[in-house]
Image (tube, rainbow over all chains, first blue to last red; front, side):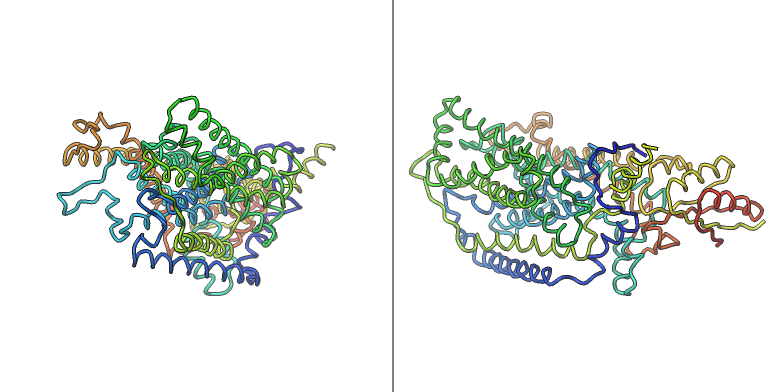
Length: 462
Length: 172
């Protein structure tokens, strides 16, 4: 067993045993749902249904019901797509990258973070599939043999790379998440007494027994999937950034986009994880597992990635001036002082200034401050994508093509709908699925829990 | 000589591993160990060979690379090469930088899904499969060692198990 220092803060608080871990994590599933859960679910479902209504209206009537126009043809649709995909990246980073870095603290948060990824990518997919204009022809995005002489897709285009990247990312994240859930479903199955519960969890756990050979394959699988998912995360958001970077527009055509987008994605993703987890740990009484230390670690990731994003902003500004390229210079002047200056100000405040506050230990260990900050960061990152897209498109090379953009109720409705969809799925997840990877968490009980550290410290003194 | 199957329940994984090593040193084969979580060192303790699932993943990944390369060569160079913004399309090597993202994604897709399907089939984890652990407590906090042996050795094994820390010993 790997020895861990007694003075390191424990990752599991209290004097927990394996059985208590099981009990704590299965309690929300076996118990009755609280009225808050029902209230939140109702609000989420209402937003979701409103979104479905706006979506159907769009498909039935056409993209004209959106605010998109001739000059500004990418607006809230692509902003929201990139926002949701960015949020999804944190889950994969927590499960995959932190596994490769052997960070044991990931075990309390990886399950819910991955669930967040799956649901976020589903929300992102809605925008991509809808913004094509003729969504019933979306199968044209794939290289399928056809009757047009077999007209193939253009593999030189990042839009096609996106198809492969996002599909791969979604399906690989889904199997990684689900495979990790199998042993935990088996735990619920073995405890279930009600026949319907037993049947459902037996189906979900697919006969898992926890034999040594199977665990050995499971661990190897997790390691290899983590090794595959890590470059996948970096590639997916780099490819998304190429949607902009390969265009010949000032403010878009810049090589800084791939690293800038990837760190921005991790930044906003971790903020969303904080928002979700701070509420979830309180409601389901998981404070002993998702501790202040976990929140602090995630805030440290937020400072790092937020600082990278801030440096990227400053680099862009500097290079646009230093390059002497007049269109590039105007693009940034427009962002800061043009008709959307307020969006730029929001972006700069929320993304550059606010995460720097986490340098103060008092603030990064304060749960209230973290929660408020996580909302601010999410809003700031939405504005970042908006500022990249709309101000650039509304002031391109030729002044006679300049156009303003205003979202319609349908744009706002579909976005609200995806937020509703996300929370609906997440609430259902917390109700019926084990939210913490309890089987894997048990592996660190002896090395990293408070109870065992006390025992080890006492034994060392004798 | 009839075969007898022994199920031993342990409360602690370190005790189980110690007992497993003792039994193996006496030449007794351990059929299976059920635990609620993966225990480090268990594979060595019970003499499990290393899993080859990562090698499978590698092979599936190479398949994915070849599949994507062949697909894009066929579609963009052989079947219908087009003049897209003047980009060259006469030979595959001319477009390799642009084709890398799709090649990479296809590699990861095939490697990941191939490996996961292999995992489920090798462990026979399919919807509707019966639970493989004989005792439901082994997904909570108990560990079970399964030893298959002849009638004559069973008393010796039982004493090793109980002295090693087994809390229960059953015969099936």
